[in-house]
Image 1: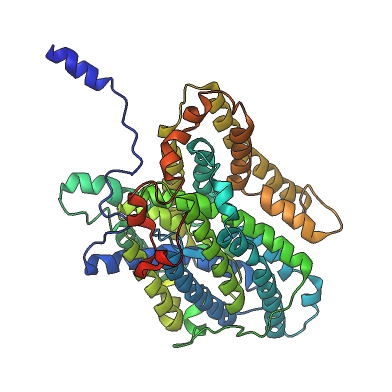
Image 2: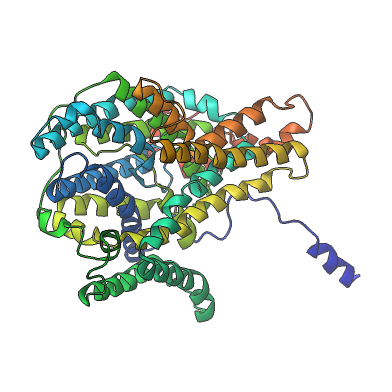
Length: 529
């Protein structure tokens, strides 16, 4: 009998968990202050990579030099700090960093290359005029998420979201950024690969070998690995390992090529419209608004992943809608201050939640404090901005994978023996990878997208939407799940809707108030539905 009981236990499937077990600190708890500060600084380092990459793409094309680049980085950090605090205080209240988004590259790049700005002979004047055009487009585009979020339209949409249709969205929110991982790491393989191997060893193997009860190496693996590899890269630079090497290798590997330390001021406070009043162009605004739609979709996937890694319950639709509204405020502030790109929920920082198993809201708010601090003290911020980008790419390889696995974990709510589920999952994932690949390759071969009309803004709208893996997968999965065989009695259970049913309303589950209620009893005046 005992042997039979053991065999029966072995054959039991893993139980479904609406809250992720094994998380050391959930969204409403926090480690002691010293540890929280270190975790906050670690989140600051992780978000810095995207800030540097996006700024490096746009500012030189706008006519800016190292001085303008340093000022824009300070501005992006300052606005990111503000937006992160607003999102964690009044938005979803999840431990999510709000930072610059790659989604806006296509429409913003189109503004940067517009002929009307290339007529300026003075590079600084061209930079200011281009920045004013970007600001105007961001200000107009921010209206979409604010209206969709605060007026509850996004709540209506996500009420139809099930674990089945959310899985491709969340999975490709992380997996769809694969091109930012190893391809960029390989630009300096002697720096990027050691970072990747060391981070995996410190976070996964060393804690098991050390058998320590305190989570040190896995929780602070990013700090340890980045510090060691950064010093190693500095030694290679000083020793002349890259002297005479190709320009792309020097830019990727050397620690003294950013030019920010000399250009950054000691103290500078970013302020609204610091480069002049915004200028408006309807076509640019609509193209950036399309990017804002994509950023909203991807942020929805990131919010769902963050709720898993912070051991919170599934997000009620009203809370998701509230978070999207505050994302609109974030993009509005980006436009006011001149942050050169719109904001989205940071995928890499959400992956860091999974690595550290610390989903504390306080740690993220402390990281926002570091963003604000280093945005004002420019020299110190420029020091950390000199980290070689292959180190950042190595970190992405792990953090984007964590977000993708958060999406895969939603399969526990679904019936994978259903052919309907198999079709929706497989088809949406395949199209989410195949369609953006087609749009990307078409641009690479021909120099323009498949839609090539005389209206550049319309071309950009189509390109930015269908070049996003998460957006394509979400549209396909959402449409199929809402239309395919909905009348069948088993469809609701197969999609996992019965598991998320009690979280459709904020008040149905008592745990929602613990994780998502507004501070200072503001729910009394701004109730969640």
